[in-house]
Image (cartoon, rainbow, N blue to C red):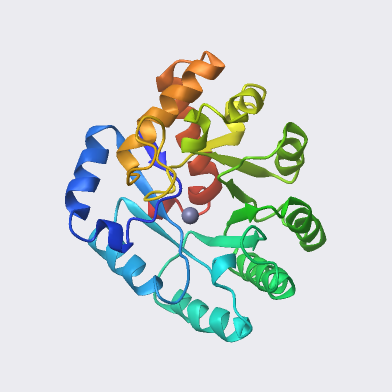
Length: 260
Ligand SMILES: [Zn+2]
């Protein structure tokens, strides 16, 4: 059994065939789907999907760095009102993205900090989106002392040094379709990272693995990612499934056994 630790199944891309998408994923052995939020335009759809698939989808709450605007305190305040009525298992996806636009860097940093404080208050882990901003994120994680909440560095694509720093902070690395790309160096890095520090993700509908690259990504392709990691690390695929699912259990479900 596999867990897709990062999938946006509530987006428009799936509105016509979500039932089939989930059915096909289950056939491939994917039985849990963790849903990271993006912003105020997605949260209601995310919660609706969770209500329809209560025992297999798990919601996160958070404001994505690319959605942060000048009015971010209001954005965050509005979003986090939802914690009253829905049991979120983590905060995500949150972080800093300096790939497209650096003009709101201070706002992004501050929104990230505020949401880390929410995670501490709620005692739930964080799921981090990091793009061209490793040092900025690492500095904040150290300053905010996040070891107690822990979390996942989603779509990890950094260096071995960065991987080690993240693991030292008590975080797991989210590995997805990029590991199957021929021009990616990620395989060389993952070879040296213990499987106990890795979780699997698709980031569907984005970043479909080879040979589906360029198409809509779906949770069923998580098995392609699991196979790739199994072959890189010469570990049996069942072992990969077992350990990465246990990593998810330890992070999200240890304190709240009743959620599973
Ligand atoms: Zn995502």
